[in-house]
Image (cartoon, rainbow, N blue to C red; front, top):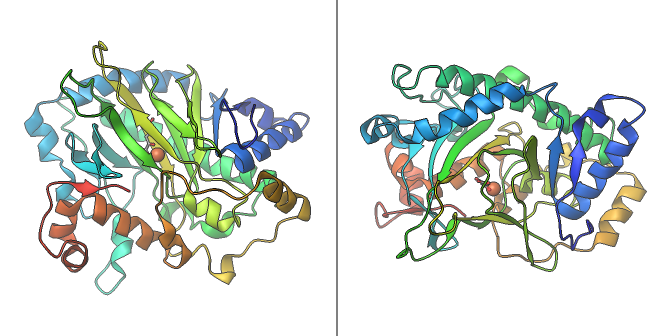
Length: 371
Ligand SMILES: O=C(O)CCC(=O)C(=O)O
Ligand SMILES: [Fe+2]
């Protein structure tokens, strides 16, 4: 069932959204996914994200992680005030436990708009670091094309979300800058197979995503992603070939008065003895840096029948995940910056010394805390 105590994640066919005769059905299914589940699978996106490109990207991923450690370290996150680059295994904690994953954060192409005197958070967006193309020929080009196509899917999907919430298609456009002033953030993630002696099976611990929308490619056949329903049960979201997983973040929940549901999720490591790691590529589709989602300037008016569906679902109970409550008062860019400072203290120490001192008065900890 797919009410708030769902036992599976709904699958929506994107091609239905592209024809006026089938769109109402799509929008109705999306409304249910937004209000009750917070997650969905999306199939048939080939008109926006090229399937062959996805297959090419999947082939690159193991090669990316197999690059010499010194090349990965050369593009480490600590080099980048934008927190874009490589993080080694075990660098982060979620809910007090180490996340057993290794990752490259790579954004859509962007030039930082920050200049002296601007708020620090303008600098959370900027250029990415890529490995030397000679060591992994064509990866950079493939990744850039992938990110720009998935970001375009996100930009269109936002208009469908608006319609599903009873707003006009451009009903959420106030949360965005012009495309040249936006950056969306991708990650390429490897969850290694734990050894017999590993202390936990936590790939990444329970958390919410921050922004409006995450578009996730499960890039290997491993299960592991789990989603928490309203009763607190963990529901599997295994990979389905030819689909993306889409989920909604805290900013959308705040901006829609709790109509859209940000849903707690986690990833379990592949079982001990698996023959290969799990791979995934999330893209976090951002809103503009200056937006304060709770500022009356951004307040949205929803039709009564949509508000009623929210009320029928019931209040979102406390889950294992508590984070990003800063959206109550802070601009979106600041929420992102604070999250990253906590996750990556080594980057903060180098590029945001004042914030670093505030969060880590006792100096550099061994690990950051993700959520
Ligand atoms: O790897 C996954 O499948 C999900 C990762 C995730 O939830 C995240 O990075 O926010
Ligand atoms: Fe997530």
